[in-house]
Structure formats: C-alpha cells, structure tokens
Length: 276
Image 1 (cartoon, rainbow, N blue to C red):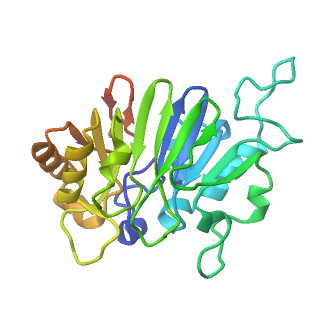
Image 2 (cartoon, rainbow, N blue to C red):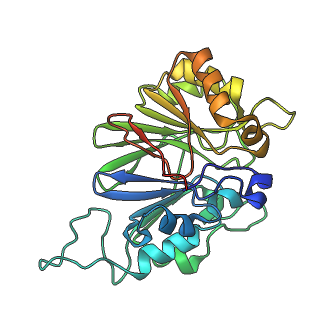
C-alpha cells in the first residue's frame, strides 16, 4: 500500500504511505495504515471491506492516519454469513454488528504521555476485539499468531512483530534503531520487512539506516529481506542501490519494496505492480 516513511516523504508523497497488507490463512490484515491507505486499497485492488484485522505499531501519523478509516470499512459492511449463521472466518465473531480486531500500541488505545489517543472510542467500540500489544505476549488472530517484538523508538509503547500463519513466519521491524538483541526476535523468519528509513546515520536515532539494517539481516538471516518505509534521502539515493549494499554486506537476498509490490511468503516470489 506504500513504501514511504518519515515526515518529509509523508508530505511530498514521493512514495505512498499506506502501510502494507498480509493476506492468507483466512485473514486480511492491514499493517500501519498511514496517510492514503484507503485510497491505495482501491488503486492496488485490495477490498478494504474484507479486512479482518488492523495492526498499528505506534502512535505516529505516518503509521495510523488512515487506521480509523480502515476500521470503518471493516465494521460498516460485514460480509454475508452462510445459512448456518456462523462466520467461516474465525476472527469475524459477531456481537450485534461488531466484527474484526485491532492490535495496537497502548499509546494508540490508552493514550500517550499527553493523554492523547490515536483512535477514538467511536471506532474501537465497533470492534469485536481491541487488543493492546505487550512485547513478548503472543496475540491470537484467527489462525495466525502475532508476537510483538521490542523497538527502540520515540514511542516507548511501540512494537514490531513476528506473524506465524500458514506455516510461514513474517517479521516486521516497525520503526526502531538497531540494538544488540534485536536480531534474536526475527530468527527463522521466511520474510523480514525492515523499515530502513535512511542511507546513513544523521544524529537522530530511532530508525534503521543501511549499515544497521545490514547488520540486523546478517544476524537473523531471513529467507528474504524487503526494505521499506523510505525517507526522502534514501529515495533520492536509490532504494535498489541501498538494498544491494545490504545484500552484499549480509549475504542475504534483499530487495527494495515498491508501491503495490506483492511477495509470496512461501515461495519468496516477487511481483511488482505494473508501472504506467
């Protein structure tokens, strides 16, 4: 849905900022639906009404701006049930018209240090489940298990995760700087999605940059690493060139994500969205 990150790209939209979607095991999960996520669903042929869970890893606008819109789409148009009256999707458990799940940082659901919540109670009240992610405590979402992982970022309640579903392990760093124990949380991942914002350190922490991402990847050794969430400097430098540096340094196949790209976590085949 989008491979851009950071405030300057958020404004310029050199790359979209709609997060990404994981589909499989009877689920459609939208991760970090930032600005433009809903519009990107229509551009890239993803039906937002079929969303069964939304995950918001921290309370920053480039990760949650469209989260309420995705919850609205998920809860306003519940799918038709079979004649038995029971949903074939284990995450869609109706309580009246309530359905779907939100998994988020506590700053999003309970409030940050200023007492401000990222999503209002109007939207969370329409859900079957609203879950505060606690690092290291697995969350069951239908047939999938999401295990939050620690981050070093501005939002101290934020998290990355490893999602186990359909025999695959998908890791997502979210926004974090490198720290020595980070790699152990992403061991044995088939696919690692790494938010690699910068080409090089700039004195502002909280994010990965190319050399730090290479170190992480060389330590956890996923089947495939897809870097994403690019800042403007990395976009101008060339994401493909930065991915090449990471692959050369780590020895792990690394690609630069593009808007609309699809990756099969089982086969690790990549399909880019057709460019006009």
